[in-house]
Amino acid sequence: MATALQTGGFVLGLLGAAAIIVATGMNNWSVKDRQGDVVTSVYTYKGLWQNCEVGTSGFTECRPLYGLLGFSGTFQAVRALMIVGIVLGVIGAMIALFSLKCLKMGSMEDSSKAKMTLTAGVMFIIAGICAIAGASIYANQIVASFMMTTYNPNYGGGMGQGMGIGGMGGEGNMMPRYTFGPALFVAWIGAALLLLGGILKCVAFRGLQPDKSTYTGVAYKVPQTQNRPVYDDHHAEDGKRDNQKYV
Image (cartoon, rainbow, N blue to C red; front, side):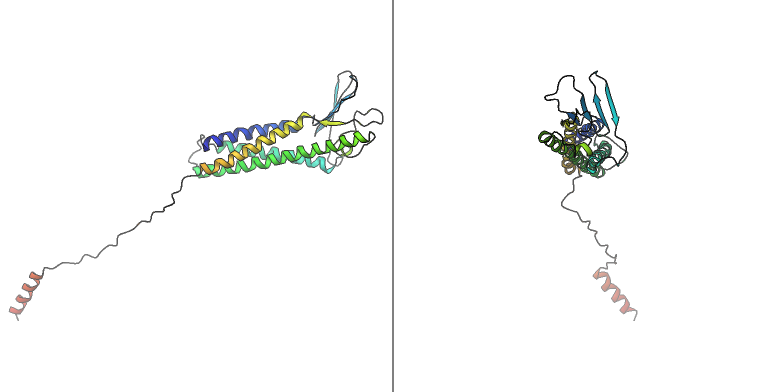
C-alpha cells in the first residue's frame, strides 16, 4: 500500500510540475472579453512574459514584457510565485524519483528512502501552494479590473498599469474588459495535482519506515566462576592422619 501511494504521489507531482511550467510559459493568462464585440474587432490576450494582439487580418503580434521596474509589485509577485513553484516542483520530482522503493540505488537503506519521500512530499505541497497563490492573485486582479471597467468604461488603473490588462488593443477611450484565460485553469489544475501528490507522499512516509519492535532485547552475560579445586573429605582426613604419623 505504501509503495502504491509513493508511486502515485510521484506521478501526480510530476504531472503537476509539468502543468505549472506550461501555464507559466503560456501567453493567455487573461483574454479580452469579446462579448458584444463585432467579429472584425481586435483580439488581445496577455501573459506573464508577453502581450499579444490578433489583428483583423489574422496576424498575431506579441510584445515581450522586459524589465522589472515597469510593472507593479503584484505582477512581480505572481511571476516570483510561479517560478518558485516550478523550482520546488522540479526538485521534488527528482527527489521523488530517486526515493522510489522499486528503484535500487546501491546500499541505500529504507529509512533514507522514507525520509526522501517525505521531503519530496513537502516540496510538492509548497510548490502547489505557490502556484495556487500566484494564479489566484492574478485572477483577483482580473476580477477587480473587470468590475471597474464594467461600471466605469474609462477606468485605466489597477490592472491596466500593473498587470498589463487594459492598455493594449483599446477602442477609442473605451478600456477593454478581460476575463480568465486558459493558463489560469492550467495553473490551478497543476497546483491541485502537486498538492494531492504531496499529500500521498507524506502518507506513504509512515508506511515506508522500517518496522521497529517495541521490545528491546537485553543481552545477559553469565558471569564466569573461578575454577577452584574440589577436595574429597575422605582424602582430606587421610592426609591429616599421615601428617600425624610423621610428627
